[in-house]
Length: 516
Image (cartoon, rainbow, N blue to C red):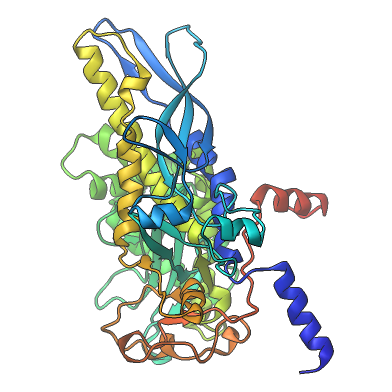
């Protein structure tokens, strides 16, 4: 390397630490994401036996730097070294502004203690943040220690970076050989921690049936695509065909599907002919919603089936596009685009996506994983508060927020996950005991990237070194044995970028006069 290159390396490490990706992500979680989760959570509402309604209003969250309560009731500041030696948790205390209002009341917000949050060393809410080397030594810390891990029950736990397929993005796959003419388009749609996997598959039916079928959460089995598009508002045959494609060959496939789907919907053809354009649209859309309603709420009365079908479509089909009723048509257009891409793969006009290409991957670091954990823990806390308040109402006692909040609900939920590594969503091994065999071993552990694929399957392509990993993933650092290629490490000068705010990007695009 030339002298200039070494200067470049030095200046890079003057700007970034080796565990910066964890610390920056955790800081964003503490400074922004916790408040967002609290703001978007539905407020608790209660009603007593006289019909009087109460609503719990929440305000800002305040996080106090780590301290511990001694046996005599006094509070003292705690540093990481003391937490390690005394087998304590190095955690911050969280306070949330709350007020319980009866109808037409607007009481003042009061600060209530809601629980503890494990603190990442060297983050904004850590006592070590901003200390000089001399001050670190005075507090029993190694100035060379980069932080980026937690201390729970006295043991050091690292949250490893998880690799996953990029969410909210269409991934096209070919199934089997090209001659078999089978393919799949998959979208992992994520909204506020909820993951919905939408899968659109093209396969030739053995007997008379539809080519294009779609599956999404809370709907048993697969639904013909045409029926779902009708339910979403592309009701007439012409609307469906023109929304999907201009290519005549593809239009013939869709026309065949429409014919078979119409038979499944048991449409009254004579009645259809006599209807006006608007009546026909409404009739077709209602028939499609009834069909889905029979799947999601079989055996229930008709009104409930229709309501449940609409609810499932709004909430669980492409939730990242919105869960409001007026987003249905946009979802239909999205699925139509997805269908055209799938048909192009079938006819060899478009190459399927490479799932191992790093463009189609995302890395979830500490802040993202802690966000998932906090969301579930906070939901448990609100449910418990609701139960405690209802119990107080039923006993005709005076309502008190401070008595309703059991802080150990939130604390234990988060602490247990970090202490055991069993994360929300059934994932295990997300947090691990920090490797202290050597200094290099510790740095390596904090830059580890883990793939969620099962270790017992070969997954040859996933284990291979992909050309797009160049400069991002270290080609040498991977274990031997079953984890080979599934447990990786970030390259030394790899820096993970944070996601951008959608609204800012939309504003920029609108200023460029791009059509909606």
